[in-house]
Image (cartoon, rainbow, N blue to C red; front, top):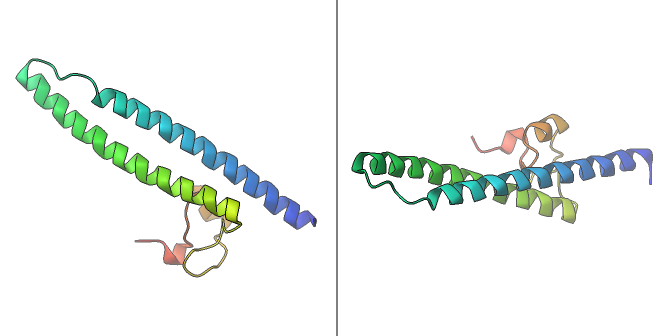
Length: 114
């Protein structure tokens, strides 16, 4: 294995660890959200209304967390398949700087959804 391949493999392993940690953090958040949503509503109508609004916000946060979790899972699969770090649209390598910002992105900047 060349030195360059060794660096790339190490980089992939670092990315995999980073994605796994992100996945663990999201799963913890989702558990906390679920736990809060399971809390019974207060008996006072005004407090119950506020609690329902808070629950709606928590549900939206949970949806966003689930979306990010799916993207992380897909990135981990791309690592396993040797396709991580390449745009799924054009096949070009995604710059390291972009992966530093969004480690689970499947797109180069040109093909990222706007």
